Length: 96
Image (tube, rainbow, N blue to C red; front, side):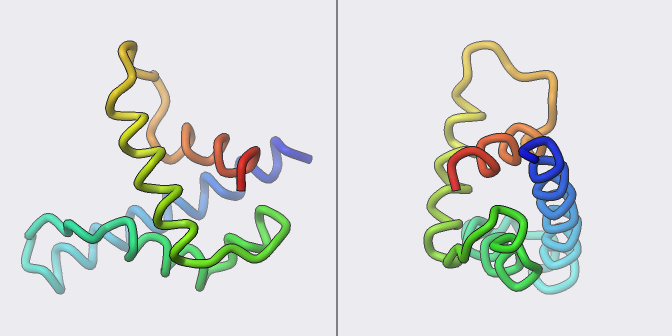
C-alpha cells in the first residue's frame, strides 16, 4: 500500500536527516555539507530504501532525486505545511 510505503520512506528520511545532522556536527565541525545529497543517498540505500520502494535504488540515482526534490521544495511559491521529509517521501513512493 502506498500510504504504508510513504510512511516508511518518511521515517527513513527523517532518520537520515538526524544522522546527517550528527555527521555535520561531529565530523564536519558544524560546517554545512555541500554534498549532503550524496551522504543522504548512501545512508538511505545502506538502510534499505530499495526495500521500501520495492526495487533497488542506486545511491547516484537517489542523490539526484533528493537534490531535485529539495530544489523544487525550496522553490515552491506557496510553502508546504509539511516537512521536506514528508513531502519527499510522497514523491519517492510514487516516482522511485
